[in-house]
Image (cartoon, rainbow, N blue to C red; front, side, top):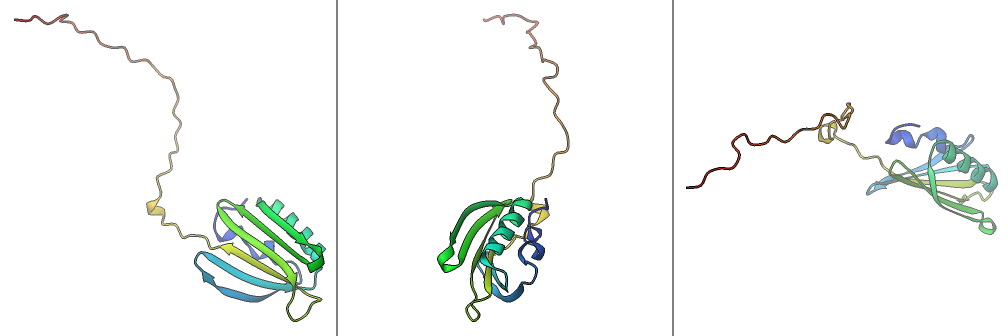
Length: 142
């Protein structure tokens, strides 16, 4: 598996063979939306995405197919990054399908703000510390 960040959502994972990028929308807050189109059928796309998501270690949180409307929606995540894919017929050519991918833009992390990594083991329990008894005994009172 790859590390967190943009490597989670690679074009090879979400751009099925024969698909083309139609629109890349300006980010809204922490979310980005990219729309693709393809000649593949709904069943082919659902099978493709379920397989790809599983192989890439994503966890599907919800999935809904509406066969009569030829739509499928799927929410998924991995390593704290949320994303969703929505499949539906293309607006201008109903023989094509639109793939609407929305994902959380990876945050840029300043390494200087992270806690240092501890690369050592603590082996225990170790030796016991014995309490030291007073050599003077009880103190005298005047």
